[in-house]
Image (cartoon, rainbow over all chains, first blue to last red; front, side, top):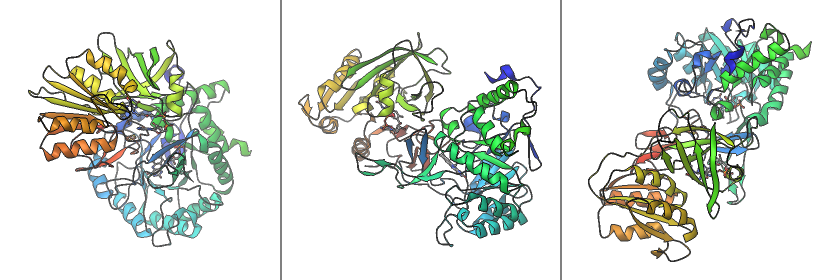
Length: 311
Length: 255
Ligand SMILES: Cc1cc2nc3c(=O)[nH]c(=O)nc-3n(C[C@H](O)[C@H](O)[C@H](O)COP(=O)(O)OP(=O)(O)OC[C@H]3O[C@@H](n4cnc5c(N)ncnc54)[C@H](O)[C@@H]3O)c2cc1C
Ligand SMILES: Cc1cc2nc3c(=O)[nH]c(=O)nc-3n(C[C@H](O)[C@H](O)[C@H](O)COP(=O)(O)O)c2cc1C
Ligand code: FES
């Protein structure tokens, strides 16, 4: 297993806009619970950082079941942001994560600009939280129902306002369901984001051909898993050329080679999502595989690979 | 990794999978399930694991028995695995049936593959009067289960949709015939959600306590993804870790 290559001559540490991570692996929101579930399977302190399940201002019951469908090397989910709401989150989840020794990011979702601000305000000054990840994939109810992350002006405005009240790491999470994701990344950067994470799930659906009906309870959902990786890599590659803040690359990562691919394309860190659902302790294996790669290519510092294909 | 000792067809598209599992963290309890990775080592297709209930477990030899029906791509691929090959399996997972001692008549009502967890349950329950009601499409589907239940001290009643066994029709109708004459102390049930809902309704009407096991589509099986959420009297719960076994009346069923 991974530890056999654990010789300290490899430096896996990453600088994420001033926050030092011991390695580039960050769990992706919604695929990893809130810490204790995965901690049953491995010591989560070994991760670079942990992104908590998305939270909203009010509690949400989530979507009708079925909420998950399987597709070739992928899954489509429509969880619908089921969560207990920010107040319950602060009361219950924050004390639970206090026992771990790694940076936690809070993934926040609003249905209006005001909700994003309320969430950021309530998380401000919480020492257990190292950063906030603004999820721009939710529909902007007041603004016509399209996802916030599809309009550069809205993204700029939300980022700027959250930036004013939130002083720790501010991550903006980008939706791929748009013509040019780099414009949104630029808007987040101009608004004052410390980094962007990309990508969220790709809009998708599956039809049950026997019942001749959409399979998911909410008809459509978001595709994740290995199936989306090549698309995500390309978006990271394009975005790296346009912005100067770090990118957290997410989308279908299964192993160390996939992490290296994202980093070469321009990612500073790697979000692991769907793989956690299949192999709870995948992160440990992936860390070992990254070391194997460094050894094979005689590379000492992992961060030297960031954006290397652009040179 | 668990070695496959047996993986053979024991009924129409029904397979009996026996695994040698030496590194179990704890002994499985009735109602718990195992999550099986169908794809081979480096492959990610099919991506998700498949959940299967414990049919039986031999604690002396660490032998786990599962029974599954070939219904789709995953179980089709699983049915091609041969004895001697290894499977990546995690478990036991989930909240088990309560097996506390009860002095009184117990009913177990199973429809289709919902019969599977009731077998290990019946074997684990302490002595006492037990009746098991089994239902399926036809008698062939019940043959293997019947053989195994006959090894235990339980009274067996069977119904099939397409031919006359004790009755021709659903196990629900068969069970209700008995419910007219006797009042069990506790009822355990597993099967299609419509059936669960009907069993639950009858029990609640007659103030009979019991438990059901539900089958919701799962992503992770370990409580991280909320794919399996179900609405309950105490808010949403995850059927993979808070269930699949729930108290009658607790879950809002899709009838
Ligand atoms: C807790 C639990 C215990 C189960 N125990 C048994 C058992 O002992 N024996 C048995 O034959 N079956 C059991 N099932 C159902 C079994 O998991 C499915 O039949 C199986 O996953 C189908 O896989 P597939 O690839 O062949 O079908 P596909 O339809 O191709 O599967 C596609 C996706 O849907 C899911 N899915 C399909 N049918 C079901 C279903 N009925 N319930 C849940 N998910 C489903 C699959 O897991 C997969 O993710 C159980 C399900 C649950 C939730
Ligand atoms: C079940 C599930 C739930 C998710 N929930 C959230 C969420 O609450 N907030 C969010 O920003 N992204 C959410 N995502 C998206 C993931 O964080 C990630 O961006 C995406 O799945 C792509 O990565 P992957 O292919 O490694 O899974 C969710 C994904 C899945 C599969
Ligand atoms: S299947 Fe993922 S939480 Fe239950």
